[in-house]
Image (cartoon, rainbow, N blue to C red):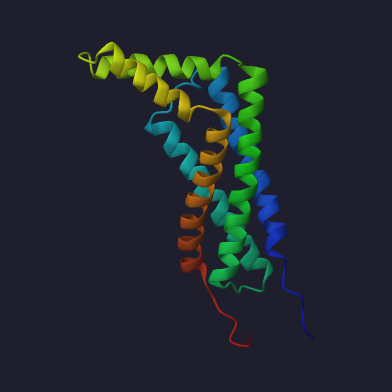
Length: 175
């Protein structure tokens, strides 16, 4: 009796939504504690650990549903599916946050970045400060941030999927 293998897309969608929900919850927690401007190593580490965990669990659950078998290609499809869904939802959340919850967010980010730039380099001329602010504004445009968010999600998702797939890989000798 032959069984149909599970669909990688289903696992990508389910675990992508789980990763999205956890990431949005983390964002809301940071916002409620007035830490949403702080992007230090601790916040980044927590975000990476969450991403590694959810992608790895999603790949493992696919393997379990596939009678214990997993190819590297299947692991990559599941992991990248999770990353794509989480990336899209993350961009949508970011747009809602910046346009509805805290409309001054980007202006505050630019001002904070400008202050940090001046503190780190007190000898900057007014022209250099203006050029630095122009560069900061270029990278904080919603379209640029959306593309960078999706690219980062896919980049890290592919690395995590590759490593998890290599660790969990188990070929079905009948294939």
